[in-house]
Length: 401
Image (cartoon, rainbow, N blue to C red; front, side, top):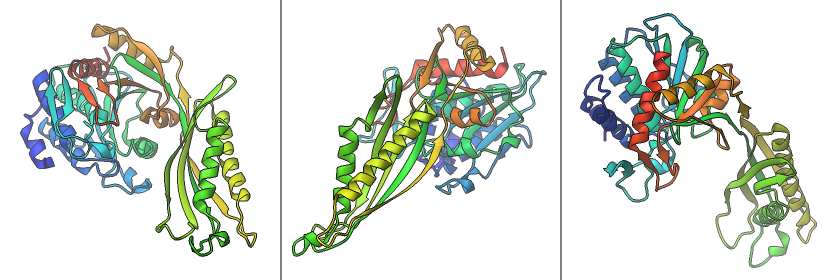
């Protein structure tokens, strides 16, 4: 579906349940993995313009020029002055999806949306959140409700490492007092904290040789990688990690190397990650990973005494955070959930959220779900009732009531 068709096919300022459902389905059908969100941003901007957003209220930044992916567009913002005084608040959601969602054709089955195309995810993470913000903004633009100053932020490149939130231009947000981020899960679940993650690249250099004639003259980078991974698994430093009261996770996610079976592989590139809510323990996990690869590289040598080498390059993707239950944004979110008949549940996430970087940059942020289930898989679905409940919670939050 082209973005032009999608933008023109939705009635302007449509916010009733049927129109909101059509809107989220159209958003999910637009391809837009991390770094390729231009068509999604165009759809949202077109709807805001048709909803008569005030001149100068729709803004964007150049965050995509400061990210590893060098994407198509930056973050998109709608900044409204409000109809009454009060601290500015912000609602946020991300526009990108994971690659498995490209080619999705959402279809309604019972009270759930699923992808009609086999092998594709739905993309409700986080097009449902993007639709919740858009429907809320269009409701306010009708001019029939009182509300304080409010900012709507649609971020880019969340799935690739929270790069949109990390690089958002704070000056265009209007200094919000707190933020309510709409992402995956139940709308009653209020996520007040999330883990931190470190991303690691490991380059293994071996010695090439003919695998049939002179394998003993080579040093296999694949063998070094295999020994290191086995070491991590055997000693409990891969997957779920527990050491006393401390917990974390690690994963070897990508292994690349080799081009032919008759060559002893001389180069392997590995990408891994370590996560923990405890920054000190996360660094310990990273150290354990590096130590395992160093041991493996020293354990293998050629007949000539040559050994492989390992080189590490890493960066902090996002730091862990945890808000107090008494934080104003936590209490406000809980009140909004109760206002629509729900019972709020405080939660801590083992995945990263835009809230990690927004909070780290001085904007306390809680996250709420929109009814997404089984995200990042071909079994992803969107609970329609939860989606509409999330819309009503978002309206409560935007109105400051």
